[in-house]
Image (cartoon, rainbow, N blue to C red; front, side, top):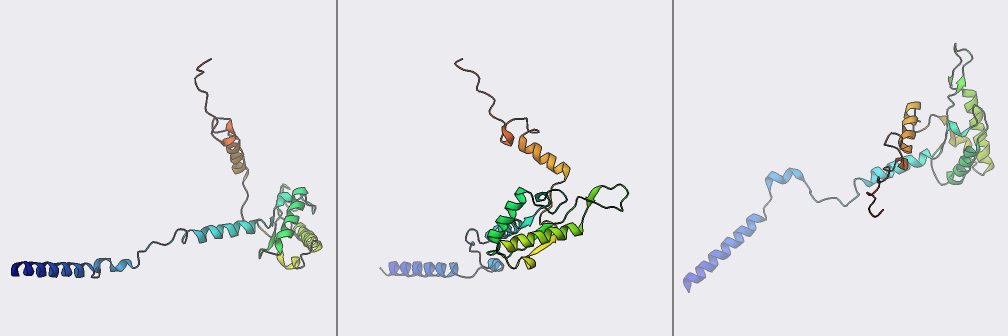
Length: 191
């Protein structure tokens, strides 16, 4: 019986020692700090939110193609865009950007190519947009409308041609509108 008590006491001592050793601090892992995983989205969500904010700011850019050539007249898409901007402008902090003109002819140039900016045209376009926004109830339009480059660069001719071709499925084997081109038939069983 005494022997059984000694074995029980020894087993208890070994068990307690094992439990205490298991609860000690691991020095080789101490540099890692807290390794508790972050909740899903806490790292990536701010990135997506910033991209969404940047995309919204891009909604307030009046591009060069929204004007009738080198004039101060907005085309139909441009007029609709200015109306959409006016509807959203009071609830957003973004400025309204008028993209600089780039298709004017410099009278002093040798070849007279339409590849130059026209500061007077840009100011006239800005004044037109300011007047239109003020007519629609945006009274701080003078401070919020600026002439500047667009937030995102447009396509070059070669890039636009490639994007069009990809969208139409021209380079991808034809057909399908860029969506895979179809299945190719099933062997004609039963015909």
